[in-house]
Amino acid sequence: MLKRMLGTFLQTLGKAPVGFIINLGYFMQFVAKSVYNCFMPPFYFKLLGKQFINIGFYSLPVVGLTTLFAGMVIAIQTYSGISEYGAESVVASVVLISVTRELAPVLSALMVAGRIGAAMAAEIGTMRVTEQIDALVTLSANPFRYLIAPRIWAAVIVMPLLVLLGDVIGIFGGYLVGVYKLDFNPANYIVNTMDFMKPVDIIMGVVKAGVFGFVIAVMGCYHGYRSKGGAQGVGEATTNAVVTSSILILILNYLITELFFAR
Amino acid sequence: MSDNKIEIKNLHKAFGKKKVLDGVDLDIKKGESLVVIGGSGTGKSVLIKCIQGLLVPDDGSIKIDGEETVETHKNIHEKMGMLFQGAALFDSLSVWENVAFVLLQNGKMSRKDAKNEAIKVLRQVGLAADVADLSPAELSGGMQKRVGLARAIITKPEIIFFDEPTTGLDPIMADVINDLIIESARGLGATTLTITHDMASARKIADRVAMLYQGKIIWIGTVEEMEKSDNPYLRQFISGSAQGPIQMNV
Image 1 (cartoon, rainbow over the protein chains, first blue to last red):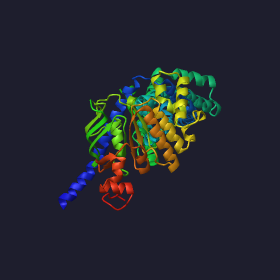
Image 2: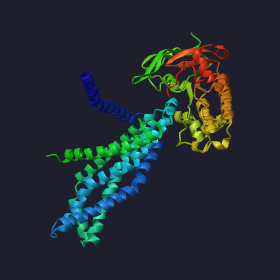
Image 3: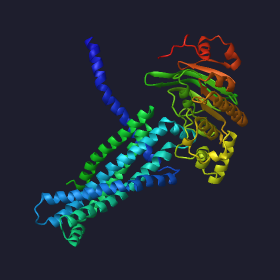
Image 4: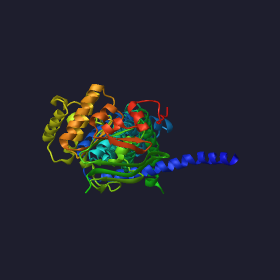
């Protein structure tokens, strides 16, 4: 009796880690296959263009608004947190550093993960449960090249561009608050911003954006590709895509920052 | 050389502890229309997916034209066409782009020629040219099946698979689809494998019928032999009776 109970207990205890390792294995296999197929012909340029528009163009409003308000908030917070002496240069530099290094890449990526990662998982998931992915295979088209490679390429290329734009808009947000609310001199604000601008900050933001773009596309495609069980399965895939990519974005953000500024 | 188009030997496939295919042996002759019948969840779809390489069997052999296909990664799909249960049309493409998908993919034909070819095949399955520019979502279930059939036959495949071709259709539309299946398969001289639990469809399109039960082919023969057979499993299935050796898990 005791032996059997112990057996059941150990089985239950072991189920979660074993399941995790199996899923990790599937995921790594999926990532390797996706990356390999990104470099293999045929390349579907029309589908790539469609993804550029989906991910890039239609994300512009959400990324613009997010970074604009992030820049504005940082300007107010910095001003309220320091003495007024030298505030002009400090606010400009803090806005610049926060926006380019952290806020533009991370907030843009989280917003795009919610918008695009979810859409990818839902679209590919629906294709999976309605047998459209099987149909692709029977029509001699490789789903990794037809569905996944264009999404990964588009996300990796477009995210850095979105973040560069987010940098400009975020800094502009800080400028608006600095000049129109805190009465800073506009010319001085711009000069201070330019003085503090370092290529490494911009590069780090762009590198982060590329990595985050990859994460968003891979997680969206992976959860969609492995979804099963009809509408409920697609719903779960969508949630999982957003949650896992958001967590990975935050973890990788720390790791990339440490990589750039580790002493 | 044997006159079998497809030879399946001792095919096994399990999902976790559930054995779906448990030693399937099945030969399909060239130009033959074989219908596999069996209840829901007996592994009919798994069988068809294993033959097409969409699922990898755990054990056993599948030969097409005498060549082993299991795990050889040969491109066997060029010889095959498939009509899916729900038609599986691509939502993002128009009707004609769905039908001409392969022609557009291999790049051997201009878009204009591919569209003309698609319209020609759409006419063969009884659809007018003005359907070509619609999206699949705008079509009824029967029309979607016809488009799926057109997509399956446009490349003139040697083997065509039909997965529950009449499911979800009214009896008249089901009969129309049955007729189209017979016409298109005969027209191409193709070997066909149909899985269904619709006995009217099976009687109409089959040269031979095989019954799948508990992962094995338990009976195979012509439609006439099926009608006369005293196999209790087969009798219960074709009479649609709840009483008999087949117990449904409800």
